[in-house]
Amino acid sequence: MRGPAIIAEKNAANVVGPGWFATVTALDHLVMNRTEARPAQRTIGTQADPVMLEVFNNPFRSIAEQMGLRLQNTAFSVNIKERLDFSCVLFNAGGNLIANAPDIPVHLGSMGESIKTIIRENAGVMRPGDVYMLNDPYHGGTHLPDVTVITPAFDASGSEILFYVGSRGHHADIGGITPGSMPPDSTVVEEEGVLINNFQLVKGGRFLEQETVALLSSGRYPARNISQNLADLQAQVAANQKGVDELLKMVDHFGLDVVCAYLGYVQDNAEEAVRRVSTALKDCSHDYRLDNGAVIRVAIWVNHAERTADIDFTGNLAATVEQLQCAKRGLHGRGAVCVPHPGRR
Image 1 (spheres, one colour):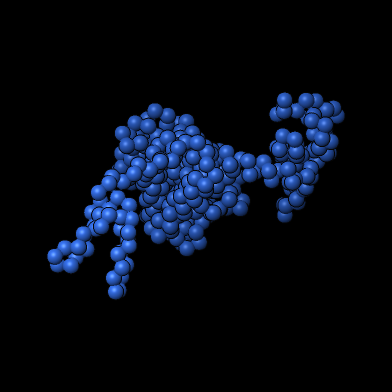
Image 2 (tube, rainbow, N blue to C red):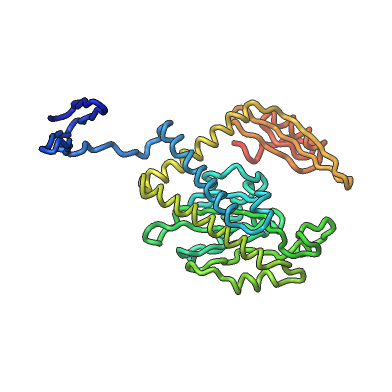
């Protein structure tokens, strides 16, 4: 019997699809054979499609979440394993954010600068199996206990970097003048712990344990529990590798051109969403007094036509009010006069 057809039995029903042929053998067995080749299916193109945009957006976020699960399950310290003080992020080859898990906002907002530091300082020398780390607040770090581990994801030939993945975890101690590495009375950054910038943690797949121990033992105030640091760093390396593996699976499944195209579409969609929200904002200013008497002042003025917002942290509230008035006329406040805004045409 040639499909399409349905063969009904007492306790079952068998569907013979198009391009299939069903035969009943002498033993009363039903055998189905394909007689026509499977029709070619249209592959996903590189043109933006709203449905496929959502299809791609979810896997990107899911990969970041899977990285977090591996980090949580393999970490040693309470800070990362139980307190979940970590963040996992995916970046494109330029070091720009693709997706992140719903982790710690202060981690996520600055990690891009850490990635770009690693890209800049290691241009042309990174190889498959290399992993880097830093915690330097002057290069995208937050406070020193937050150590960022960064892994480049190469193509199958190992010649081109396609993505970067990063994980930032709060280590229980990284040295400093007090246990926990968060002294309230430090006056220089070294008193918070060991300062790390562009340190190669893994080279060609080999974890540089001795070099890492030497780094964490250095400085005036070295780390107090280096074995715990090493365990958490190895967990971060493992989490990053999960991200690399899953991204490369996407490339194998969809093709590099399609994945790269939708990386851009996801970012474009995020930008558009933020610009739409900005149209609902209004000009405002606010000041907040800290317990040591210092005052933080900030002002925001919104250009609804361009769907942009400028944030002023100069701390001069009087000048800020004047800037707000100038901004409404498309100008920029400088002293007592309004001049063309440097950021606007």
